[in-house]
Length: 337
Image (cartoon, rainbow, N blue to C red):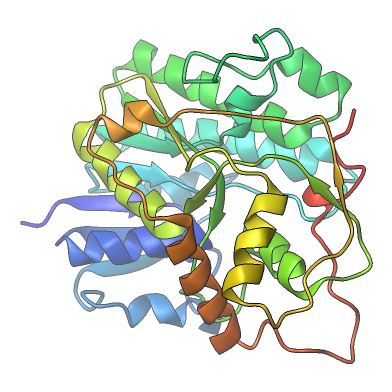
């Protein structure tokens, strides 16, 4: 019998690539989505291996019963679902904290109730980036945790929520005998499987290519290919020990470096022309993950496949409507405090 696992937010950018990979490896997959009947989720049922091996479940992380139903019969869960802000939040508690922290607790409890053996939590590199006490010349690794008080002072609600949720999940796993490993990806770029929606990181990349009225922060963001993220998640499922954290990103690169590579590869786009340097330099290492056998793609391959995907989806053409705008997270003065 095929091993059965569940992927939360299976219709999302990361979730869909993970579902595709799991099906290709012979797994039976439960994928949670907001509405299985929504046409935007139809692409999941068209994936190789989906007939007979994929079930879509209507679920919400703030609704425990829907999670328990989706997890029933599964030996493992990949918790991918999380809100990522595109605009400045009006109510951080409702928009970010509750879905992330309370939602993760519901996932944890549903895992226990459904006798799930293993949970891979998709956290974020944001849970190890913002620590003012960390030596500036020392590369950040899995021993570094974001300072929650610093996040509150700077109103960095995304990093606060992800840090609280990850700490809680690892502690819960130790206390309740649930095998929990956390996964800390950088900004996730890559080709699209979805036909409709675009994730926040790719929207920032589209803005860099098309340009627009906003000024971007030129800050170092660790990046990673969504296909390498899926590979890493399955690797962790099979090899990671309990209560372990794993950073997943490519080597150091700021957005100006990324822009220069794209201009060399695709010289005919407009590209962003307003970008300012800010004091935000995060250098991390993914050696722990690489030691498990993770081998990421080169950034040029990621950019080539991603841009071709954007072109195919018609995302890079001109428009008579509103100008292209950069997501709030990447816009000056989003995080200069």
